[in-house]
Image 1: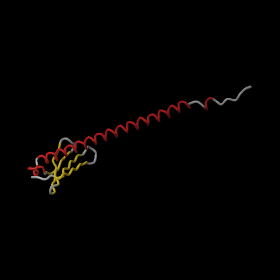
Image 2: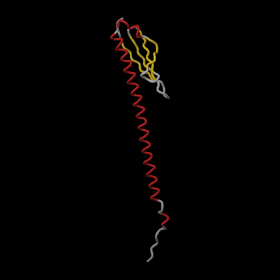
Image 3: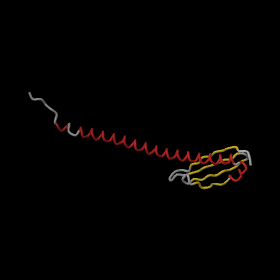
Image 4: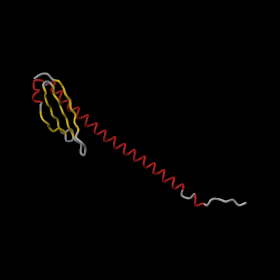
Length: 123
């Protein structure tokens, strides 16, 4: 009554292999979450700069609406603004249309710009 059992060597290391595969899958998941968080931080910074640029442009338009007697003094070529990295603001006029353009460039990225146009009568 002697049964033939498979040799023990055919089962050795299976648990270790399964553990290594589980660690690999877990590590890839952690790396994916870290990459997602890095992308979210980048998008948050981009959003902050867009918000700041919009605020700066709207502030300039607001000043022009309240000071219509001196509209010509607001028309200017690109002038540096310290609130944005590499930021500039420019105001142009075409009839009663005033266009405010805010540009900025983050290190290592393409330049961005925001353009706002308003019709202002006066001056």
